[in-house]
Length: 214
Length: 214
DNA sequence: AGCAGTTTCGAGTATGCACTCGAAAATACC
DNA sequence: GGTATTTTCGAGTGCATACTCGAAACTGCT
Image (cartoon, rainbow over all chains, first blue to last red; front, side, top):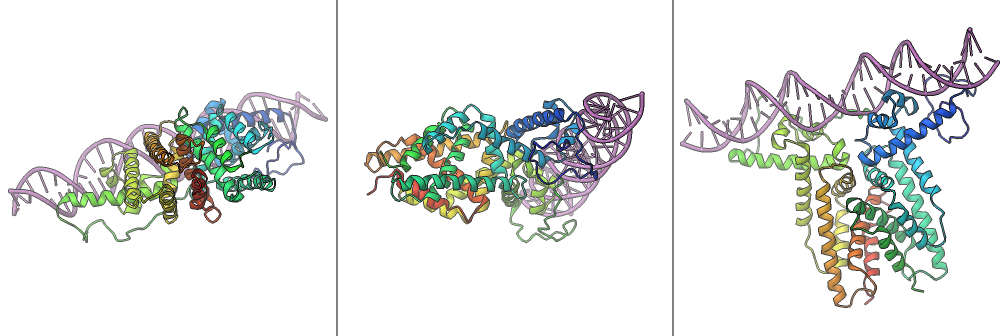
């Protein structure tokens, strides 16, 4: 975080280059933030198209129109850039999430919206599976993310259960995991054959099976 | 990222000059087939652990106890080796598939069996997602495989439907795609947190929702 | 204008990659 | 035993990789 701008919640590992200055905020900070954004955007696209291992600094630098070394000034390691991309993705989807009423409406709506963002889906699907490999930098990110989503859905299901709107015999935790898994698995099939898979419809089917017919 | 080179001293015996092969069956052909099998086996493990791009000839050769160039004699290109691994995987799972009666029994049983083969799951999950990227050599393999599995399940569901054993309002094609997606998505979560995800139980839950309570 | 700090990059390092080439060693067949 | 074939590997090629180093160019503040 070159410019000490308070904006960024970029945590931990600062640049290690030994300097220790008092809130250095010389000019050009705005430019820096802009650059970072465009770099993250390009990296998002490249990682989505090629995956993490196969995606290169060079290609990202080319897309953003700067040298590979210039890029390294902002993100000194590849995994740092990856994590920035993932957190940026969170912001995007959260921003685009009005989180409306109802599990069904919310989820199906989100799935429909995703159909116009294949890059986001691809990034997510590819990195998610890649992260199960040994020592992948995004592994803990995905572990945390899955746990978070599962508990959110499980809580929503329990609330619906309390209202008697869930079909009897449903285990909220397992149903939450299933919902997440179903979504992700369908997205992979959709990436391979977009015209043959209707992710949103399948999710709606599942949710309607879960809920009491009213 | 430097991914420190780790040697896997599989067969620590020196192999430069005197070589007493214990098997040394009749004819070069037999030896060749044997070699191919062990190479495919090692490649299976490496691709499962690292993915296709990140997995290297060198590491595979180390595990099988031969030089990288020796390996190239059997599989002149990397993608050829990949496809051999995938087809070998098909053989394995087909062999281990008694394909018993009943969708539920069959699927749940297979899922349970898979729990003891994390390497096979990892290979499948990682390569499957990786294959959605541009120009991946396994892409058409997975497209074909998914189509095949979906039609199989859809047919089974339609047969059950004819017997009146499926809950009304189920679309067999979508349910088949959902079943496959659910399975794959759950497996990814299971790879990340094996102790928190019960793939077989979730699949059973889903199948019971699909079928008429009898 | 002078300076502190930021941004950029050219050149270079060390490594790894898939793959080629040519030849030696092992083996099979007669 | 001699010869053809298969199997193996050492050495090398060309390229890509992440990352380092050091310095130039730029920026805005005083």
